[in-house]
Image 1 (tube, helix red, strand yellow):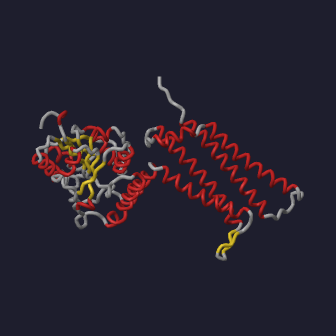
Image 2 (cartoon, rainbow, N blue to C red):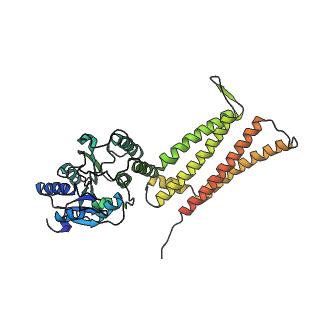
Image 3 (cartoon, rainbow, N blue to C red):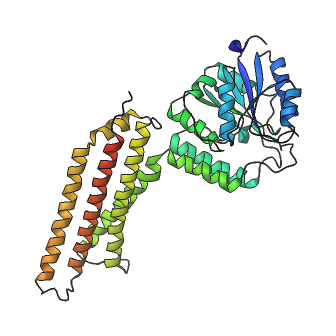
Length: 387
């Protein structure tokens, strides 16, 4: 091994109480570096082990970085920052991944790919290596959502064995600290248009006698939430469009009176549901636009297309639109009030006026929501200067 500046590969293992399997992983990784004639290092990112893990690493003459901040993401990020290699291949230290078989990863990285994901479903999953809930439900669903939301060409979104160009990943400024770090790396790489590849890899039962750190429901939920937070169009825009179309069609069709379809009558209650859908759709669209604006300003979701569109929606024209909607709603409300006054504020048995009043209140609420959104968006857009 020559000086650190010329290292090609760092094999990075996050570690938290892995004394049972850590030495096995280190021996396999060392064998790979020697057999492949790769100038590299093995780096253990210890996240506060209370067993003999650190002693095992030191006895095997590998470098250890001590990470005080708890969490899988914290350990990996500290390891990535401390790594000396141009490329990094990371994998769990539980002996479920074979560190002696990394040729596909390094070959792909050498061709210029910046993130190389392992695919356990293509490489082979040994019996009892993955819980059925993860194998048949969790991983396939989250991988499908990753492809759907971000067009990521990976069939195993959460494989823990992956390789990447160190500088490319550092430039993403990843910040999650838990298990969702694995998702953030892939999502942010896709958004930044890094070159992503996928290679088959195997998964074996881990060699530990203790329970794994992964919590199925908690960590699965955190992964799902992370995916949704990084795709405002699926979380806000598309539901808003569906609700708006339902509300618009319903209110237009039922404004003049009840309708009967296949012996089913749709009347006032359906009209009210349509009006409520319109209001919720505007709220979803408002929240979605604010989230997208903030994500764009913070460079979480850079997109010239959306940037140009959002920049055209200024505070002035958004406020003008909101006031217009409020005025229409107030006009309809005054008309209903006039009709009520015409009967000396007595009983007003008119479904038509009732629907008009509901629609007017819906428009007023939508206008107020849009007006508030315009100002929040304007605040987010204020350029900050630092002396």
